[in-house]
Image 1 (cartoon, rainbow, N blue to C red):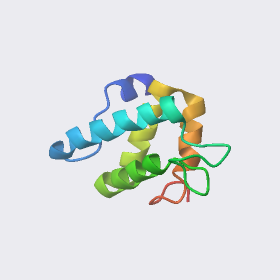
Image 2 (image 1 turned 135 degrees about the horizontal axis):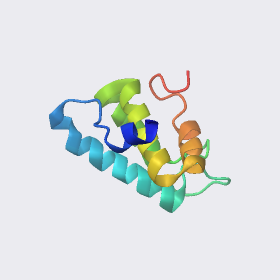
Image 3 (image 1 turned 45 degrees about the vertical axis):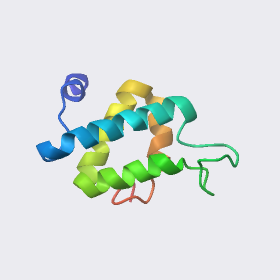
Image 4 (image 1 turned 180 degrees about the horizontal axis):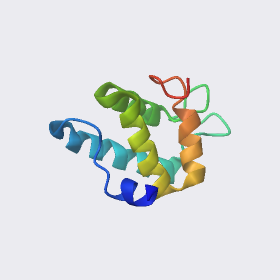
Length: 102
């Protein structure tokens, strides 16, 4: 049932924000597939905690748009489209954004 809910889920935001949210989620998925959300060493595009800088910016923007429910929605989309391993990396990369993992 959760799979169907996520497959047909609408972002928890006003309709006028949906295009932006869709673009942010798509970019987030591409980042994960291309770069991962975490690094094991210092690389361009990652902060001093080895977290992907743009992924954190997207998490912050999603938090501004719809708080924790919006971030949870995006996280489920990443898990469904990029896999559980990358989703677990995103979970850590987003630590301390809004109410994520507090």
